Structures are given as C-alpha cells and as structure tokens.
Amino acid sequence: MDRRNQTSSRKMDHLRICLERNIERGDPGFGDVRMVHNALPECDLEFIDTGIEFLGHSFDAPLFIAAMTGGHPDTREVNRRLAMGADRAGIGIGVGSQRAALERPELADSFSVVREAAPRAFVAANIGAVQLRDHGQEWADRAIEMIDADAIAVHLNFLQESLQPEGDHDARGCLLAIEELCRWSRVPVIIKETGSGISAATARECWEAGVGAIDVGGWGGTNWAAIEGLRTTNTNSPREEERVPVSRLFEDWGIPTVVSLCEVAGTGGPVIATGGIRSGLDMAKAIALGADLCGVALPLLAPAMQGEEQVSETIAAYVEELRIAMFLSGARNLVALKERRPYITGRIRQMLQSMEEK
Image (cartoon, rainbow, N blue to C red; front, top):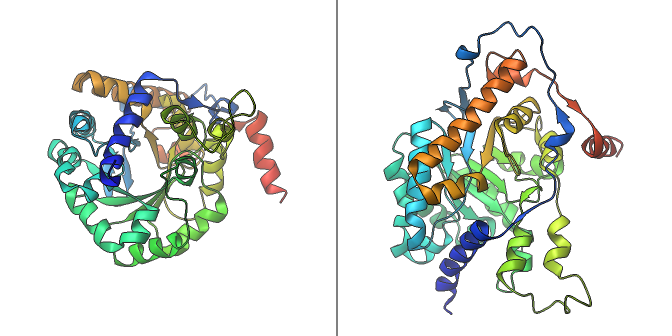
C-alpha cells in the first residue's frame, strides 16, 4: 500500500478500534486526589462562573475536545458533530493529526469541516513532531490554513511510533524544529503528548523553545500501545505464549496524568490536562492542581457517532459536574478553584514525593 494511503487507512483502523474494543489502560491518578469540602461555600450554584481565558481566547468552560480523528472521508461527519458541540458550548477543539490531508489534499475537507461547523470556537491544528522536522514551516502553515486555526499542536507520540513497524523511529532534531516553528508561527504552538505524559524537565525545554502551552497527555485512559497491539501483530515479537508481546509490555509505560500535571504546572505557561479525564469532578481536580484546560476525547467519540445532540449532552454533563464540584469547594470561579489545594494520597503522593527527593 502506498504510504499516503497507508496513513489514511490507519486513521480508520484507530477509530474502529477505539469504538469497538476496550483500549483504556492504567490509572491517571484522579482517584488519589480528593477535593476539600467546604461546608459553608458562601456562593450560589446558579452563578458559578466556569469561564476562562486561554491563549487570548475566551472559553465558557475549561473543556477542550482533544484531538481524535480526520484524514479519511468517513471521519468528516464525526468531526462536524464534535465541532458543532464545541461551538454551541463555547469551548475549544483540536483536530486529529493532519498528516493524511497534507499528503493527500483531497482529504482536507475531513478537517476543514471543523472550522465550517465551529466558526466561533477556538480550533487547534495538529501535526507530528517528526513531520514538522521533515517538512518544516510549510507543512505547519498548510495545517493552520486548512482549518483557519487559532493555534497549532505539535504532537509527541514516540511510544506509538516505536510500536508501528511503519512508524517514524528517528526522533532526532525535533526540539530544534519546534523552536523554529515557535519563532516563525503566526499562531501559538501547543506541545501535546499522546498518552505517556510530560516531565518537568521536558516541559522546561519546551518553554525555552517558545511554546505557548503544553498538553501533558498523561498515562491512564486511552492507551496507544493497546491500540497498536490490537491493530497489528508485531512481527518482531516472539509468540504470545512464549513472551509478553511488546505492545502489551509498554501499555504500562508513561507518567500518570496527575503526576505529569503536577510536574508541569508552574514551570511556565498554560497547561492542558489530558489523559483519563472522565467526569467534571476529574476536571475540578485537574484545575485545582494547576491545569487551565482539560482535554477529553474518548468519552465524546461514541456520542459523536450517534449525533449532534448526544455530543452536546455529554459536554453539558461534564460542565454541570464541574460546577457542582466548584460549588462544594466554595469556588465562585476558576481562579478561586485554582486556590483550593486538594488532598493527594496513595500511589500518586508517593510518586510526587519520590520526584521531590531527587
């Protein structure tokens, strides 16, 4: 199969697997975070303010529809429904990797539909760090123009790439390419991990390169090692009865979302917490730990396959759960919520303490 067709076909494989199989693994750590209950909240639930400013744009809620799909004709309607949900709710949306459409321009409408359906929403373009290194500013500009983007995410998915026989296995030069993009891009650059988390050290390198925001994309939730293991048999691995397949072995690789968030928050600019956020209560915990936005993908995929109303209902449920958590914390707005220090227990506390000791 031609490499350009292979990219598009792989997008449909990923979408099908996410819909049909259990691809969640690990624990992002929100179970070890407990909000402090305020028995005298002194605020009115009906007037809780969930609005926030992010990279110069106003959001009605700190929810971001994280990158999911695009690059195949059959994904156009999914992206349209997600975009309409974002526009209605006054939140942001990121498209999936635009590599397929950059290689095959006839696929661009599976992405451009997002801006068509969400003319007022904050929209983020998306290219891989390796593609940025190999194709430079020209590909980034085309990705931005394709959807009239307000920002561009550069995704880091080297775990996934390492498990694909056809993957990009050379990560050299990516940081320099990111630095070049930050210098010349007309929109802010967001660095986005895809399920393995970002450490404080890597975050500092990204801030120094000039990025505008970091999406931690932590471990726990959608697991790309599991997806790649289900998509294809790794011919480099011994038979399963003799050894654990390499994809299964690396399902446990990465920094839990809560740990990554705690490491990255405070190292530089705004942070998006993505990875296993499954409720508005998880969102409240993430914001109290330093997140500015919370990215959600998989919980919106099945609703997007059903219809526009189902997407809007799911978004509304997340926001209502967040509002209740804010009310019970005595936080009238997100600034106040960021001042509420939660309890951290169990394995997450141990991991954070072990990092402090180094």
